[in-house]
Image (cartoon, rainbow, N blue to C red; front, side, top):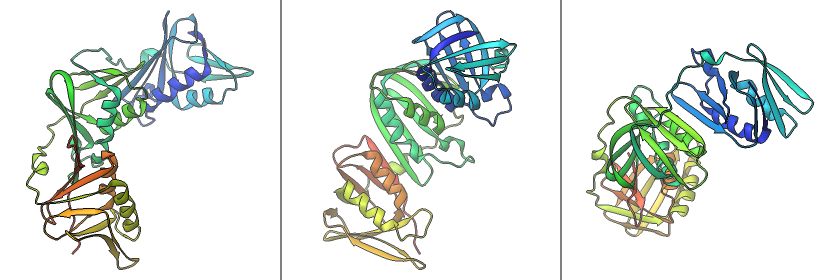
Amino acid sequence: MKFKIKRSILLNALANVSRAVSQKTPLPALTGIKFELTDEALILTGSDSDITIQTTITDQLEIIEPGAIVLSAKYIVEIIKRLDSDDVSIFILDGTLTRIQGGSSKFDLNGTDAFDYPRIDLSQNGVHLTIGSQLLKGLIEKTVFATSDKENRPTLTGVNFKAKETTLTAVATDSYRLAQCTTSLEENQSFNIVVPKKSLSEISRMIEKDENMDVFVSDHKILFVVGNFLILSRLIDGAYPDVSKLLMNNFNSSLSINANDLLKAIDRAALLSDDAKYIITLSMSPDRVRISSNSQEIGSVDEELPEAFYKGAPLDISFSAKYLNEAIRSINTETVKIQFTENMRPFMITDVDHDDNIQVILPVRTY
């Protein structure tokens, strides 16, 4: 294998592909990035078995001799980053010993035979849908933060994507809050899958331009085509829990308020909270809305919200400031509407004019 390539192009590709690589794997080859040089392109692959990222490079590439090698992700990225040259030459010296050369610098790096790299099926088959990249990014960003970090309920560590006819719904919950976002599809589709949080975070991070992208869903995996990158993720086994009870609509009171004003008030109220989840309280009546928190060790804060409009019976409700903060930011609107039933029942946050993004939070007891 021997080729010459523009350093910036290679570095950008390696930086993205290496994000799928884990140093904690029973398969030594998976700690590296697979370089596969054909007569037409350089193909880079990184994987930890759960997520695989592959890219194909044809620009600013001089192919001298096709071949393949696996190079340590930890070192190859840092080597390319530190080279002080516009172009980089990479070639196998002997066996798996590989030279990386740029300017007056040269590194000899021990590689691994490409035959030791696991075969990964990146074929584009299964249920196929085309979706706008920014639309998918929005679905991810408005839900993924509500996933659980606890492995005892694996399905809750991912986002549930359910397609029914021309509607695609994304749902995430950690049992204490729920995020749901809905969008329309151009064609009828039918699937119900759970995608791991890490995979979705990587996909969202890699989406830059607003363009149509292809998604392929099969029994145990999902493949995203993002520009010249392929991102393959395993799916989480198991049925996602029924969350319909959290999406009840028998609310009897509501609060409308400027989102930015509420975010600032939440931040101030949480400042004196000594709980890890920053528990704060909303005290509401038709003529007055207050936000407060109290800590026996630190002190207390109480603030009236002048531009808040509440309808319903007086209500005091306590909850995680962190959860409400993330919910409001995900909705990304000027005015939010918060609907309540009673002080220990879940409450719902939406855009004042639209309900395609629904956030639900469970209150907490403070006594």
